[in-house]
Length: 264
Image 1 (tube, helix red, strand yellow):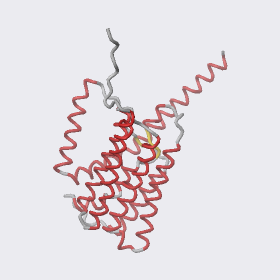
Image 2: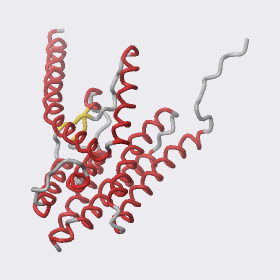
Image 3: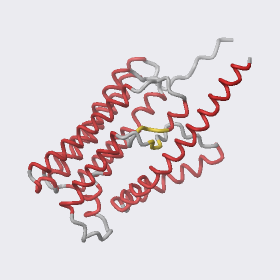
């Protein structure tokens, strides 16, 4: 009998490396297109373009790992596209919508945000790979796709069915930009959702939840984005508490192991 060959989704090594990078490049093209739509005052499409870019950003890395097509070039390309899609693009969209009314201060605030996204991604790339595995469940600071969506919240609110007409956007938008910039470069632990393990018996409920969410996103697009953003913000303190509790248990375990070695 002939030995069984391992099944591969993509057999060619070059194809396995190129395919995820194509997804990444498509994402950055969509993200950049949001600036063009904002120039034409088509802000609804600008928001959707950045949202699609965020979805692609979440998929390209998983596709690379699935088909074993990860590479150093892909990692660097992903970070570069994140700066463009979730740093430059949202900043320009919000500048054309509101921040341009503040003159030089508005442009300066945009620069602060873009630099914060770049610093956050640079730190992410140089983080040691020797960290304990449990740390992979957390990011330091909020990820750039989340930051890119959060800074768009005032614009999304204006397009939603929620009534926030009393908000002074000339004050709210700059303050929000500064807060999100701080969260990006901070070391506040936030969930990464990279290693979620779902029991097989629960997979049907997860699939239903995903379909239900995207259904809401299609029907009540801007309302769903706002509610999702609020839920994410509430999860930040929860993830921080979870992180420090897990870190405490890990340090206790290390201390116990050291004491055991000393006795031996």
